[in-house]
Amino acid sequence: MARVVVDVMPKQEILDPQGQAVAGALPRLGFEGVTSVRQGKHFELEVDDDVDDETLERIAETLLANPVTEDWTVRRVTVESADGSVAGAV
Image 1 (cartoon, rainbow, N blue to C red):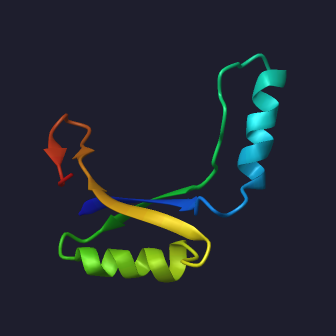
Image 2: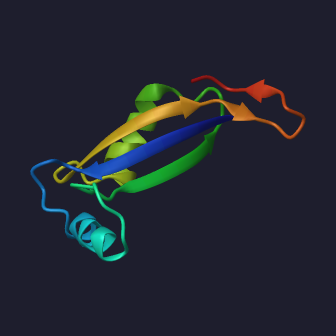
């Protein structure tokens, strides 16, 4: 099994009201120095080792993201098991 992470973010030209709300709240909560926030989505998928990158891209494009308004990245990550051994690829 492999773990795949898909991060989905609004395209730069798309208004991000949730990110703006977070950015506006930070100074009120005493956090200074943050000039911009963009809020997105993070997905973790456990997939069979034989699922190829093209299939993962199609999953992201057709189900996890709206290609008109969002950009996404797909990456395989290393998974550490309970016994400390490492499996998977980056």
